[in-house]
Length: 146
Image (cartoon, rainbow, N blue to C red; front, side, top):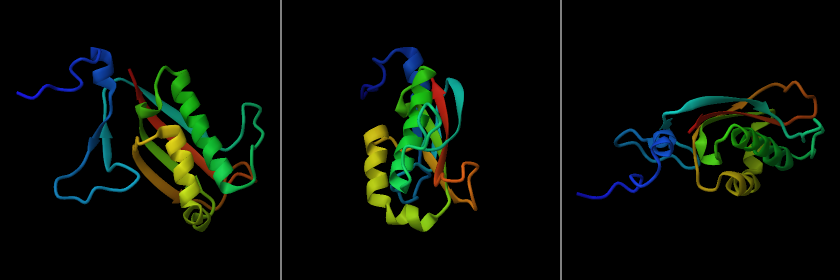
């Protein structure tokens, strides 16, 4: 019988490690998962924009704001005792989907720097505006903590 690679991990860690849900016969999505399942304490991360700890936008460009917003989501998860891989869902709100699409290479690089090859369930939504007038992107997350 094959050995379960997670069997040597502590019980609490195994229980909270998200697992990818992929319906049989579906093409594997690129850059996200169709579903994620995990057990543990649920952490809802508020919508984060590209500002620093003093609530000052760190950049006016889309990629700079995306990187900082995602870093803010990750920082919140880590502060709660999780890791970037604890994220099971991200909702990304953008004010211009064309700007997002035009920046995909740089957005992907920023994403990999922060989340490596962890791809939770995701949705991307274009909105008319965000509360902060200069914000171009807002990212909300859901994580399962050990």
